[in-house]
Image (tube, rainbow, N blue to C red; front, side, top):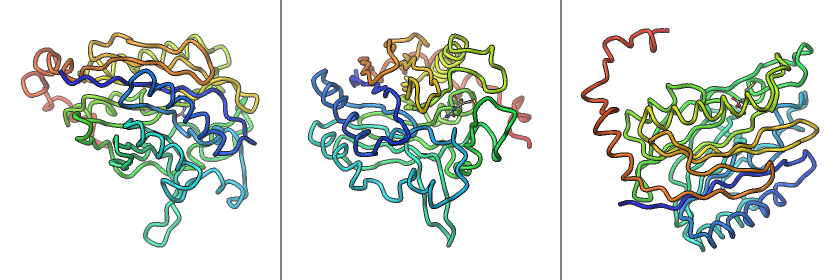
Length: 304
Ligand code: CDT
């Protein structure tokens, strides 16, 4: 068996005026708990250092630059890296990235995979950016991810680390079967993902938290089962800047069953013992891609 105890470190709300170092102290407190529980890997949410700023329309780029990280680790997040390495805990962390590449300033919604020695072994940039690129007065609240970020440019890689095959994605990616399948085709055994999901639909107010939680579970459980992988889907939750985000963080087994679920909308650690060898049965039977997939019939999926 390849057992790894996984902690899902759900965060409660981060208000717009909360500092990054305060958010990091909250994460370190969850890491202390994860260490006490014997975890070897911890998943934090998407944009875990700041409020979910795409709900705010900020015209001045000097003002919104403060939400982004230029380097990782940097002095704000160093305490998290140091504590995790001291405990021998690997982790996944979502944050807003600003990069200077090819003489251009580029903005991404990013996550990193850090191994149990504190080394960054992987970086992912969110592919499926939801929402809109311009201020939309028709909506009850804004979701300006297409304004603040460009789509990721690295696809969905996987990394051989911590005695397993790890992949990453972010929030809206979890609703797209292609996300998991591209990683599934590379043999992924554990997918880490963080999310910030508004509790109502800004274009359909009758779609409330119950339905939103249902869609989240549905997508994550299907992705896990159909690709024979563990998935940890971890929220930033609660009322942030007056806007309600769902909780409902879950860790899902390759059978599709939920192993652990958060009960609150606050900082909360959920824990599940994941035996990465549990993926093998499904990968060798019902989802043995080499024997059962029929890609000759899937052309439309990739044809533009
Ligand atoms: N952060 C993120 O991707 N949130 C989206 C909201 C979709 S509605 C614009 C999600 O899929 O949960």
